Amino acid sequence: MGNVTALLVMVHGSPKESANNDMFEVVELVRQRRVFPIVKVGFMECNQPTIPEAIAECVSDGASKIVAVPYFLHVGTHVADDLPTLLEEARLIYPAVEFALGRYIGESAIVSDILAARITNSGQP
Amino acid sequence: MKAVILFSHGSTLCGAGTALGNHAERLRSQFPLVEVGYMNYSTPTFEESVDKTTAAGATEIIVVPFFLAPGYFVTKSLPDRVSANRRRYPEVHFLIVPPLGADPLLADAVIDSALNPLRDDQWREGLNTAARLCRFSAECPVFGTHDCEPTFSGVETVLNG
Image 1 (cartoon, each protein chain N blue to C red):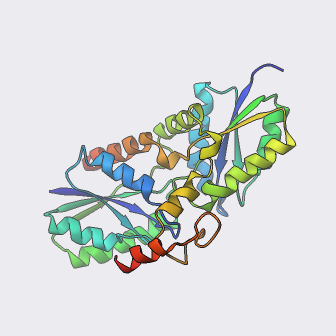
Image 2: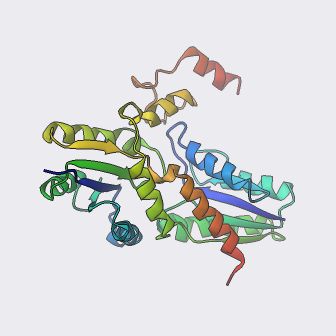
Image 3: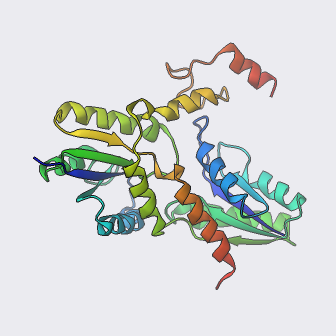
């Protein structure tokens, strides 16, 4: 098995499935950038696949490493505790696979740029 | 003068506003008057930030929802709060801009996060932040847990404001 890194986007999930549409659009852009050969979405609640299911898909697609990114704007117990726990459990199930955790996207300075653009463009029709 | 209020849900978790505070701080280098205003749990409230920015001379307030999706809070709660504040300040122009939605830069944020992962000992740093910024609030989900044992200094902080 070569070095194949999968990106797992960890999402909260919503009882209203259409609430995920924007996120899927963003994930499609991530896929198109071709930085990661495998890009999967896993949900914490409400929607499928669950995070453990999405991890299983990454492994069966040949991932030797999985980098998980919390698609959350805020730190709460999911980001601070529940998501790390899910990855620790996955490490026990797949000892040959390397797991890494990224910062939740709400912390990213790139989000400041999005907010700045929203403000700058607010005067336009 | 134009002011900006970053509108956010608020959290019972101590220290949860750190990231949003950093966004506000970065925006202050580009815009003269930037505040955060919370809907619930956290302070300052949206109303407090409206008071503060108008007192500082704002004639226009751009309200930026710090939300990913245009759900109930963005499409209903926020417009209701803004309407109530328009009645308080009829001379001030309020403008609500769209939430983050499917902004293509979010793809960059995801990739950037994946390319710069945390060290293992940073995985639960949110819990450490909560303990460090303890407001001595029993509502906080980690209050009194192993990660956040309220200390006498925490009590003093609360008592001394």
